[in-house]
Length: 405
Image (cartoon, rainbow, N blue to C red; front, side, top):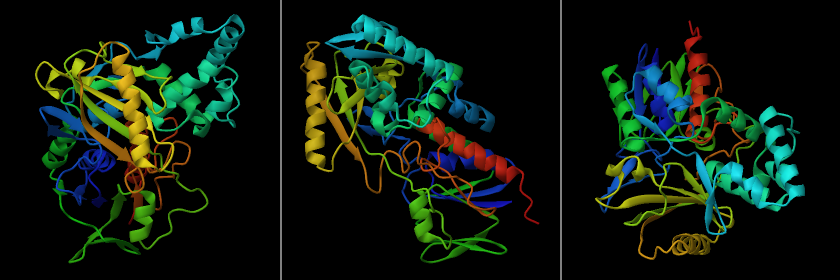
């Protein structure tokens, strides 16, 4: 089949790599580079990511790793030596040690919550915040996790999403870092697409998608191209705006907002390759140090540290100031006073963290001619890129079973 893909972000590239084996693929990307919020750019000797945190939620064992392997991509993903530690009262604790930080009554509550979560014996119709709220420390820890992983607070996170996330964690394990950062994934996907005779066209702005009885048309301002199928890596709302079909119906996608801060430092704030969760911060939910795995991501003798936090209100300057205050405290409380803020990114409005927050994702299958991929159509329980892959898998399975004759 002749398939057009609008948008060369991660979702579009993943779909393109898999489909290019047996179909003719053309990808249209409006920017001069591909990868969207999942690639790197050099800055002051550091490889700064455009969005993601150089980290794959389920490492070398999860859905993204499986898809890359299936597509024939050669990406080396190094699983983290520690999934995560929690910075509380200036000390870093493994998850299991957190139970010792509360009194006996709360400890028993926490142990019961942890057991119920693992056994899937929880009311799926409540929020994660409601599940945790009886124990203040548990709620802080929960907010830190959902803020880092989903860019949501615990009360905005549906419990059924958490249950599926927990199931995936016990199945696949924790995070990993791709050698070369996010860009290594994008470069391999691009290589596979081109080796399969697919075409990637950058600096091409798609202005319209029109579904007809005999095919789908992609229009720029100057020309139009006919395809059997079109896959949109644009947001559901933007896709609807430029197409002749209704996409958003009863279920409305709710974007998630966030702040990411990239930091350069000669001293070691983090000595492992997992996540440092920060439950006591006002905005920052966690940090990582991908250069602990791949030194090429930072300039010589330095460390690249990335912090991520939720955005609570629309006063962006104030939100950034609060986040920078969090970072100053995190570094200063362990005696580190020299560090450099390399880049501050805010993700909101037309460029959010996710075009649909977990629990508000739409179905990626619109009809036999039009499909969606990306962070507006993630699969349930999929953290960031893992959720994007789940959506891509659903689209690929549908297309592979199509009969358009």
